[in-house]
Image (cartoon, one colour):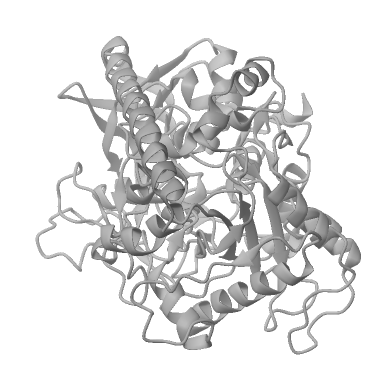
Amino acid sequence: MSLLGLISAKFTFIFYLIGTTLLCAFLNGSYRFYEYYYDNPPVKTSYEYIIVGTGTAGSIIAAGIPSRDVLVVEAGSMRTSLMDVPLFQPLLQGTQYDWQYQTEPQRNACRALEGQRSNWPMGKVFGGTHMLNNMIHFDMMGNTDFSGWFETPELTRKFLDYFHRWGRDPTIPVERLQYGTEFGEDFVDSMQAQTKCIEREKFCEKMEELYSRLFAKPNVTARNGMRRTASHYYWEQRRPGHELLLNAHVLKINVENGKAIGLVLEKSNRTYEIRASKGIILSAGTVGSPKILLHSGIGPQKHLKAVRIPLVQNLPVGENLQDHITTGMDLLLWPEKLPLRPLDLISPLNLWNFFNGKNSSLLLPGCEGLGGMLLPDVPRGLILGLGFMVMPAGIASDGGAHLHKLINLREKVYTQYFQRILEQNLQSVSILPVLLQPKSRGHIRLRDANPHSPPLIDPNYLQHPEDLDNLVLGINIVKEYLEEMNSKKAELNPLPFPGCRKFTFDTKPYWECYVQSLTLTMYHPVGTCRMGPKRSKKAVVSNRDLAVHGVSGLYVVDGSAIPKLPTGNPNSAIAALAHYFLKVKFNVDLLGK
């Protein structure tokens, strides 16, 4: 290990430690300030509609609902404008603006993580998880992605109309990522230039046109490079008759004679019962919505004898949990230092560019390139099985100050693998293979009858053996990418991964061990209140209007209603689902204005 590497590693650690400590302190302080500033109780005890959650779906619905008597409830605090800086995205995790969920120990995955638990950051803030994510807008999903989602082909076409009308959506502007490094540009240019897909048992032929579409710099939900969410749009509408209640926790839905008549919420240590004369719309997310339903008795709790909640409706709430997963952080080495080092970030030119809306690294949300690939067992031309996410950085990039804690990495693993990258003065980068169509299924259940307790989250990662095989295939494809890249600069990181050293490096058993050790979420959980026909024993909400089966006046519109993961970042599909709901339920078309 070089002296220069040790000095660089120490400086990087100190720089990021000071920076992250100050920024996290500011964020936590702003959360508490807004908690105090918005310490208002509900103005009334009854409203026409109550919307629970202000994420992508909740904010779009609130912006378009044709009523001047609406209560919008958010469990988190008001956002701060500092959260709109894309590069600060990782620093938002682990703060008060994050629910800080963790999964249960994974039997077949996450061995390099403490307790084999995956951290699941989710937005506890006005704007929801869209305030914490990578801002990626993915619109390259095929129509077959949504096959079987809706009751009729006509309704499917209605949804697709909203999905494909991006660029005209006033609620979430989309633009091409404004910043990129030499590594990301080299990857995208190389893959767009290919005239054939990578052979896997002759399952694909020439794909020049597809490559030019699938390998590209991402579109991001931003305006002039800064984060832009549906909550920004809703806030600017200042809709008359709408009341926004922040830092308010919904404890349960009140149901009488099969109808949702209101809810119970807690704010500032006081409990309120609020009635809804026309309907309640749950948009609390894949974890939040099933948690509220289960505490309301709309779903079984047989697995926990300690839970005593009267059963209202026996629906499969919390089942069918799915998530995109990945691996491969810091798996590649780049021979030159990229302009993302501490002094580069705070250089006068970089800061000048940022404040003048130009090409600044502060506009990088993490991902600077995307790709996709068919899998051998998927019929040609239907849906992608593997995605690829290009990042000019990795876990070692901050010198061990913050990033490895966000994914719950074992300290010993960080020291033996990622820290050595810094000490050898190497530049690590990442092309992450992403499993887009996992076959494993998990669940969300109640921990106990206390509505403030975090739920039991078990995504059951890599339970299905094909999921492991396909992620190993993804690593092999990344290796083949290295041979195709124009500059041929990138190379495979030769360091053996802790826990896998008993296997010969770069063999199938080694990569299987690697994937089962460094199993990472892509933060895309869906499916826990899946939509489907009423006759289906697997469905929670209607695949026509998203009404909860058996409970009138109650709707679930968020990622939990998605029956199967789309082959890309689901935020764009969730937004389209919210627009679809406004059209089907209220005949409102925000995109047609």
